[in-house]
Amino acid sequence: MFFTLKKEKFTAWYKNYTLKDWRFWYKTLFVVLMTFIVLFSYIQLFVNMSSVVKQINDLNLSSDIASDKLKEVLDNLNLSKSIQERLIFYKTSDGLLHAGYQPFEQFIQMSSFFTLISNLLILIWMYVALFKPLNEGKKGILNKRTSIIFAAYITVTFLLYNLILRITVSEIANNFMSHFVNEMFHTVAPIFFIGYVLFGVKWEKGTAFNFKELSTTWVFGILGLCSYGAYAIIRGLLKVAGGTPGSSQQAFPYPFLQVTELNVKMGAIELPGIVLFLIFMIVIASICIGFTSLYNFIIIKNANKGAKKGVNNEK
Image (cartoon, rainbow, N blue to C red; front, side, top):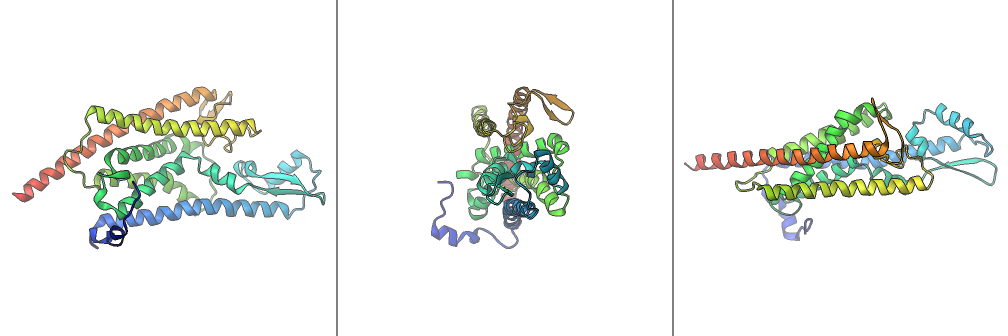
C-alpha cells in the first residue's frame, strides 16, 4: 500500500537524514508551508462566508424586497460575484429575508478546482517522501511514473494559470494573504515540486522509460485528467439542472468547462462553451504528454550524470 508506515519504520524515519541534508529541510518546509496554505484556504472561505451572512442579516431586510434592490444592497456591501452566487435567501416567519450558505456544498465546490487537487497531490507526495525518503523514485506513490505524472499535473496548473487564466482573474481579495495563497498554489509550489522531482530525487541509472513505458505513462496521465474533466462536467450539469447558471463558478470551476453556454469569454477569446472545452482538452493533453516526456528525459540525464560521478569517485 502507498501510505502504509510500519511502526518501527515510522519511529526511526529520521535516521535516514542528517541535519546537513538539504532534502530534509526542503521537504519539511514545503510540507509545513503548503499544509498551512491548504488549511488557511478552507478556513478563510468559511470565515468570510459566515461574516458576510451575519453582515447581511444584521440589515434586517424585508422579505418583500425586490430582487434588483437586493442586488443593489449586495453590491453596496462590495461583495464579489462569486460570493453573491454562494448565498441563499429564504423568508422567515417574522417577515425578514434571511441569508445563509451551505458549508458542505462550498467545501465540495472549492475541492472541485484542479488547482487545489493538483496541489493536494504534490503535498501528499511530499509528506510520503519526507517519511519514506528511500522510496523516492522507486516505490508506491513515489515511483517514477507517479512522480512524473504529478509533476505534469502541477505543470498544467502552473501554465494554464500564468499564461491564460491570470488575466481573467479579478476577484482575488486585495490583501497580502489572498495574493500569497494564490501565488503559492499557482506558481511557487509548482516550481518547488518540479524542481525537487527532477533534481532532488536521487534517480538511479536504469530508471529510463522505453517508448512503451512512456506511452503507458501518457495514458495514465490523460486518464487522470479525463476523470477530473468528467467529474467537473457531470457535477456542473447537475448544478445547471438544479437552476445554477451555467456561467457561474458554482457550476463549472473554470470558464473552459462551461459546456452549456453558447458563448464563453476568456480574455480576448469568445467561443461556444463546447468548442472551448474541446480546444482546452487538446491543449491540456498536449501539455501532459509533452512535459512527461521532457521530465523523463531530464531524469535520465540526471541519473546518468549521477552514475558517472559515482564511478569517478570510486576511481
